[in-house]
Length: 192
Image (cartoon, rainbow, N blue to C red; front, top):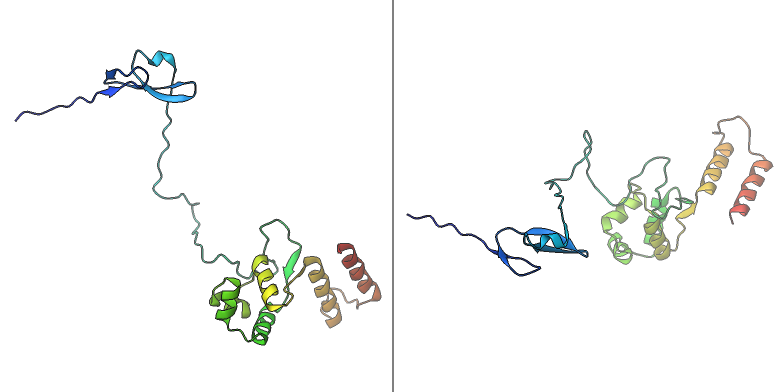
């Protein structure tokens, strides 16, 4: 049996000659395949090959798993806003507030979820405070339920400090004074 060998002839993109060997060149920014005689008309292009990865590289010793697009509760840390402003935080007992407002409007978790574009399971998790709403979701809930879920962070910390003093849980033994209340009012006026 005879073996057949085929020689592939290619054409120079500059002059049109048939040749077996072409070189990639650049003439005025245009990449062309040129024969040996025409390759001196441009600069030879050297292509860098990038190694192809079959899987993304993950840091060693870490398991990365995405479970939800909504942040879970982290004690003492309000969820961060994507736009860089962190001046608002979620009120305490937001779950009970959401549930009462939803029930007052006679909506099921499914109906409320459809109105704001979320799943019913997200609404249920919010109501039992297993999920902290991000600022976008909180704004949607405020609009539909007509409740206040976002308050300035500085006010939250000051109000909690005053409540602790009133209840006797403050770090110092001092009691709440008129000066403490005046400071809070001055700071809130400056923020407005």
